[in-house]
Length: 385
Image (cartoon, rainbow, N blue to C red; front, side):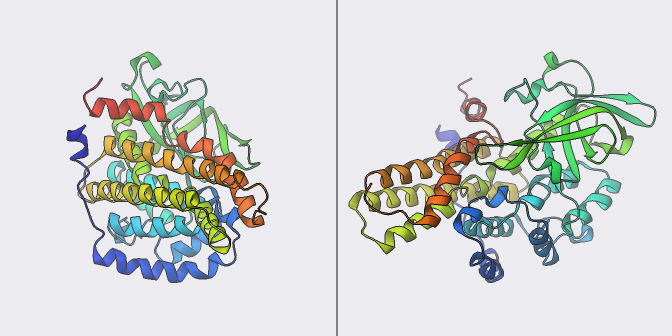
């Protein structure tokens, strides 16, 4: 355990990143007053093309991508600050989220020059939204057992298969999918490749799945004899597992794994300030604050590794596992606290936000890798398996 914890060296955000924070806060201030807490609680599940394009107009989509591709070429710390501020107020970021966080950096690292020149400027302008094509029906969390297959044909590939949990797939332009190009599911990580799939192609069918809260952001995607041109392949055939592992480090390490319930927590604290507060409620707020501070420093430490060009896969898994446990605890603790005062009226905005987050919270430990898979990765990092 000590060897793994040694990887979490304290890292402070540089002055330039903190200066950037003030600019982001000023931009977001007018929006916060317009959105009630139950809407802001959706945050990175909130799909708003216009808002994402307003961010893009300021250079805040693709912020770490090189300027020659339309990016702002800011460092990972500046992106951390931007993401933290967006999530802290519950801004609707889902439209550009995946492209900015992982699809763009993945294409930058593994794509051809032609792929970079085509996709990255569109991402930075808020014109190309991406979703993730990893999980599959009947495979559970076993990503290496994917059965979707791309078969070489003249001029490209022929894709058949299914993906699930393709968040906002029905609203996106592209998906980066992990599929099998050789061997069988029994070959596990061998024979996997990644493709950029234009979701408007013939043979692509996307069906939204309604969740407990009534939202339709998860989708199931069907590929029936979809022809992919040769330049849809990212990297080399069979390189997909290495690529997707690097991609997941981007997905799991950021502050989005800490702040999914933060608007609800802020709303509850505001309600406590407006009325009588018990010692147990003060203690709960203090405990949650201490947890958040610790997790935030772990996330910044992981960001510092990304800034150095490293791929902190195990560290990101630990941040994600602990972070989603923290996120899920917030609605439970607030419900317990409110239940101890049955005669006290609940603020309507707080009630609506709590109702939404309570319904959405079970998914926090599913998206981006289930708790069981993450703990297996952590165990391997500790040499326990």
